[in-house]
Amino acid sequence: MNIQILGPEYQGKEEFDRGKIRAQKPLGFSGQGAVTVRLGPLFYWAWGQAASAGGVGFHPHQGFEILSYGIAGQGLHRDTLGTESTMQAGDIQLMQAGSGMQHAESVEAGFESFQIWLEPYLNDAVRREPTYSLYKHEQFPQTRQAGVNIKTILGDGSPVQQLVADARMVDVEVEAGASYVHKLLPNRTLAGLAIRGQGGSLTSIGQAPVQFKNRDFAIVQSDEEADIRIQAENETLRIFLIEVPTEVDYPLYNKAR
Image (tube, rainbow, N blue to C red; front, side, top):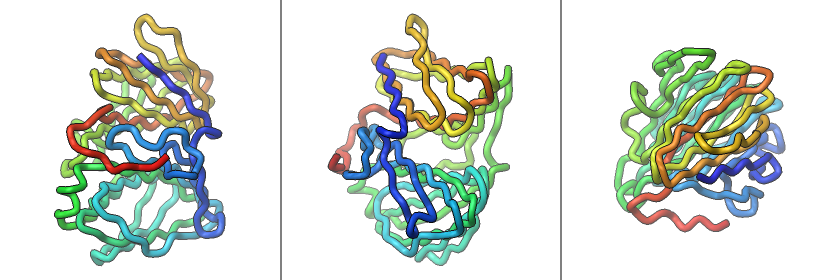
């Protein structure tokens, strides 16, 4: 098993609208500072926070499947499909860019979100019609047990069923002293970003615990099936987890480092 913990200094950074919106990027583009630029079909991951109201004007996308997840505040989405919608905390918006579309975003002060890009087989994706969907927080299943709350974003029970790329996502809150266990199958990669709380530890049977802190990016890969245990330290930990195949059976876009 291989566990990597990458602090903010090993992740990418970018500013939008003259610094009104700042993003920490566990996975970014060449020259933005991230030591890891992709994990299988997981192509891009930005954690954006707005110090004041701002936005990004119309810009194009093609082929990729782009999810935005609201963490705090609200933002307005517009696109060339004629969509205008508001994303709030806990909501997911999904753009399947297909043959091509443009969108623009404007956000209020205090807005916080993830934007995550997944890569299907692009040769097929660019032949599909572009689509946009908004899913509200209340539509997603949540389970709670033994001090752990799990909200399923992609996976069993999720309303998001049309995604082509292979991915699972959960938003997990772990109370101090409690732990969450994630079953990781062979040829799968688990990526996690801690966004609330002091941090915690990652471990599996026969492995020594690996510590991580708030804002750290964790990457876990194993050749064998493994139960990955995530334990909170002295306060509630909130960590967003994405699981993808380590390798896929189609060619991936050659993303420069």
